[in-house]
Length: 121
Image 1 (tube, rainbow, N blue to C red):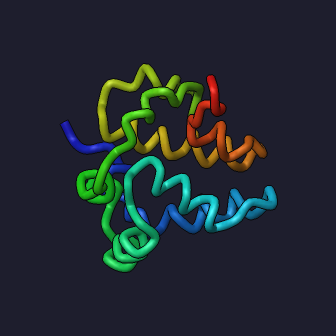
Image 2: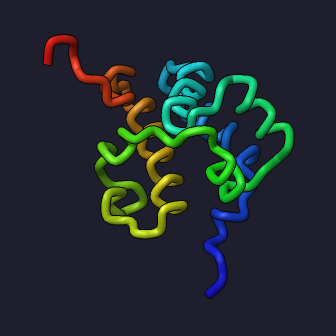
């Protein structure tokens, strides 16, 4: 079975699309980077290095410093598919990122996007 096309797509070609989507809704590149860092553990410098190296999505997630254990709290539909029902771990991680960027672009507060519980809860 051949790999899905998105797996071999360079992350550096999709990243500007994430940023543009956020900026169209008055969010920032820094917001997108914060989401990516929360999900993958990449620091801003580490993310910049991955973009410079032009790694594909497969390498990007394989080399992620630390996938966030709260990522499994991400639920909803992306491209007509429920992210929590995706079996392939790489595809699920890609769709998690898509879902987070969608939530950012829809104006959701960063605390909710990053699945932070209110203090005292």
